[in-house]
Image (tube, rainbow, N blue to C red; front, side, top):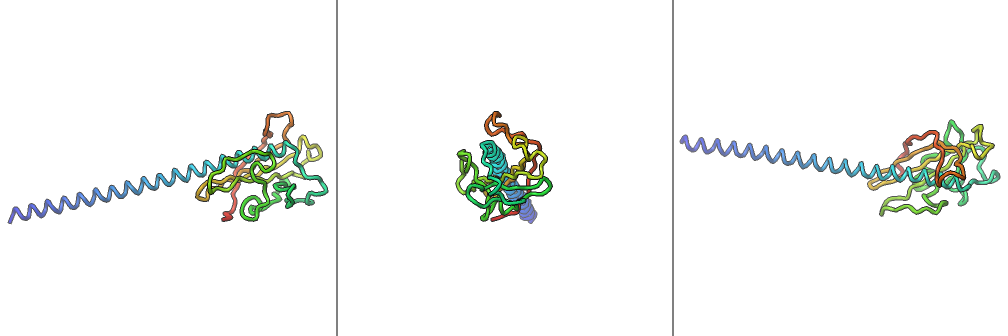
Length: 198
């Protein structure tokens, strides 16, 4: 009788230890999956950030090449162009943007695609949208009359997989034509928060 009780106790201890091992294994697997998911999200966010940065440089090159709509075709006093030649071009104020989030990205965007006016090519990722930008000419800037010192706000959005998106904004002076390609004098920059347009 005593032997049967000892065997029963041993069985219970073995089952308890096996259950604990299974629980620990399940917890470790769950943590590994969570860590892998976080790493993938970080990589996609980093991809979107790099795409947005590259797009700011492309917008600067567009500005440097002199694509500026004529005064008679610009929307007074603020707003964005909707015609083909003026895609991605807005007139704004220093204290307020002239565009809405839906104009920068989303199905109704009127922003310029990376390379649309500069001829640059973006290494597209299958299933990921091309980055876009808007150039705002700040018409209330004291330096507006002199195009060499005029102020502009460059707004760009880059994308990654799984809906990752990053938007950046830079305040720049008109680039010097003698400066290296794509070089703008950046006075300030910041990340932007955009609504999800999917």
